[in-house]
Image 1: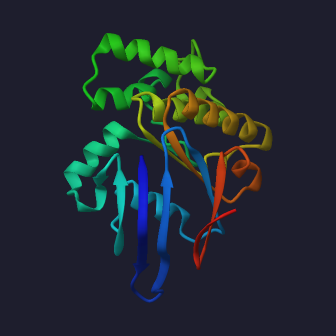
Image 2: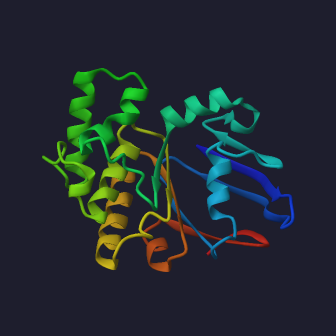
Image 3: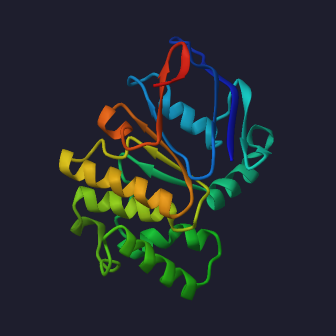
Length: 221
């Protein structure tokens, strides 16, 4: 489903450095993998390249047979909108929208009708154990609950690929464990593939397999 081939990325300027060098791996439908590494090693950069948010110096990213590196910005935006979901460390829940409205955003962007949207949002909120909280405002939620909203939003449009970038970095250990279990369970239940970026060994253990990113490249743990 996802094939990364010989991906490299360098940054120029006073602190010029090669962040990623000749990275290759593949992800099948239903796979849930973790990418570990030290802070600043390039984990988030790798996600940005796969998602088409940044361009590699060399290499290719294939999603369902399409070479994302050969596409223009508009085409990449549409692919992200329809086929990718994102869960961030900082939640990125819009404070002026209700929980339900936050979760519904990807469906609205994809032109899904109101009736189908209401049904799908209710289903996802129930799946992340927030059933009946659709009218709540974000300031009424705990950090763990906000991350559950983020998971529901990432999955509501049935993406084929889900990215989770340090999704428990702002949570206490108990909430982090609950969110990690829920994230894995939700990705699997929706039939998606997932990439979890983390520096936590405990978080990585929730994945099917783990890769370690170093200055020398990406290797299986």
